[in-house]
Amino acid sequence: MTTEAPGTDARPARSAAPHVALFATCIADTMKPSVPIATVKLLERLGCRVSFPMKQTCCGQIMTNTGYYKEALPAVRNYADTFGEYDYIVGPSGSCVGSVREQHVMLAKDAGDEGLATAAGAVASRTYELTEFIVDVLGVTDVGAYFPHRVTYHPTCHSMRIAKVGDRPLQLLRAVRGIDLVDLPKAEQCCGFGGTFSVKNSEVSVAMASDKARHVRSTDAEFLVAGDHACLMNIGGVLHRQRAGIKTIHLAEILASTEEEQR
Image (cartoon, rainbow, N blue to C red; front, side, top):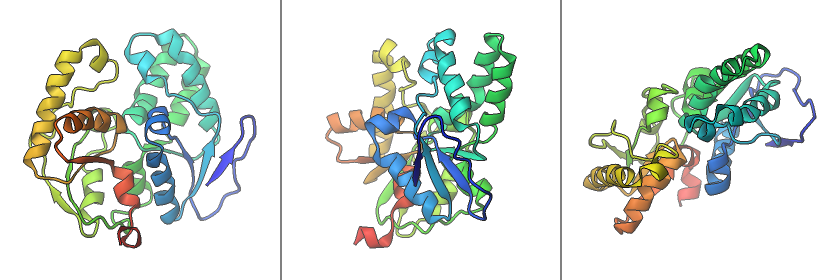
């Protein structure tokens, strides 16, 4: 992976290897850096060249969802400027990718900035959630992963309803060697995180997360996997307090895992 300093135009010459800009997301970068690291490892194993633009910051979703549209605009401008030179932008988060695709143009138009709206729309159209990119762009459903554990999958709300990743995560998980993938009861139900929802409506959030944790425990899984670390953090907190013994793991970390590492 290469890092690219602010202000540099590092758009590469065309080559057979897809050149991908990693959109690490701020929550993964600060709370679970192993997720973007696993994403890079996985994409490079699949033949991609990966760059990390150093100017990237938050996508602005927290401000947007809380109603602070004006305050979110600098994040929109920075995203369009930082990633504008890349053919592919890939992020390990359906929530953040969904925000880029569904909110950035809206914010620019709300501010009356048609130039920014055009730029944001162009970059958003090249922004992919990790499993979308692997399945739809690279045309791969077996990434060569190995993970000999009992696992259940939580389809996060934004990945399903905003990013619309569909069954792509499950396609990739089913091809992982050694995995025992079990269905999660009431998988479609929200875990109660919802960003600032979990702060403003903490009692409701805890009740929702407790329901989710109960369903996770009923599977006897060793690991709960999802494509958004924020949701894993929310459910994982309840599982930890319950001493359930179930670990949380991001989808990228399973897909990046190899048999050599599991020995």
